Image (tube, rainbow, N blue to C red; front, side, top):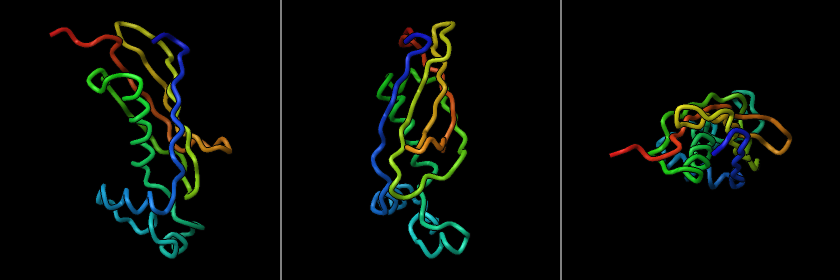
Length: 130
């Protein structure tokens, strides 16, 4: 990895089925993610993705790029909702390399340019010596 390298992952479309399956797997049964009436009751037109689902896709981008044991830190903040039927794209860009580690800026964005998640990660360039 070197400064300027970019990694992308086209996440699958967020469908009602994906949201229901994720709710079951994660234990997060917040109705705004699976019940359109609950979403409308809080002023949202339709259900939307769990933020942790977007974070999981971004984590997959990282583990596709480097082995999990080389990830030293990973943090995110949510900036917008991901609506049902969206097709997010996850991107990681190496912003600097120093002291044997690459520092990455991370984003999840929708096709219209809306960034739904921003974050950062630090990954070791080589496995730790044993």
